[in-house]
Length: 252
Image (tube, rainbow, N blue to C red):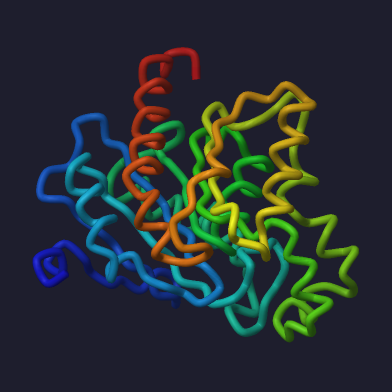
């Protein structure tokens, strides 16, 4: 892990921490990735396999840290009393990316894991032109179950479990407007989240929306054991999607 530490730094962006990966040589196309962490806030800087993939493709990566906000568009006082986690990503992080690396859509890929995986999908469904290339590892889609379990943060943001369900990624899927390239994966032994991921897959299939997914690979259930196993595939998917969009950039 130590060989990658020099590529990672920490910045303060509007009063909140972000981790940044800077490759030795930035890709010539100017692509940048944004990563959304899970509820336990596991950091990619601790996962050598992801650093290797970023370095291999020459990808700058920014990883905002918001705590267990579920990256919603609702004020979460534990994060910030003035703006939401979603707004932080879509406005403040995006402005920083444009300023530092001169990257704007469609040259920005969005991905996340668990809590961040569902959020990456939700944001891409809400703003497909902002995030036309998206990937999700073990997305915790039906997080209304956390409300029923008494999650204090979620109960602070929502009035009831149904309000949470109405705010989940699946409910934002639009039959005529979707991200150009989307991939999601979930270990079939991940009993907590696999059913909601399967429901998303069925909805996309029924609407004829193009997507890629892997709900068959078994690699440790839910957590970084699985994420690391899928890292190369996820980053390759994002790069391939960004490549295809760059070839069509004149019509974007």
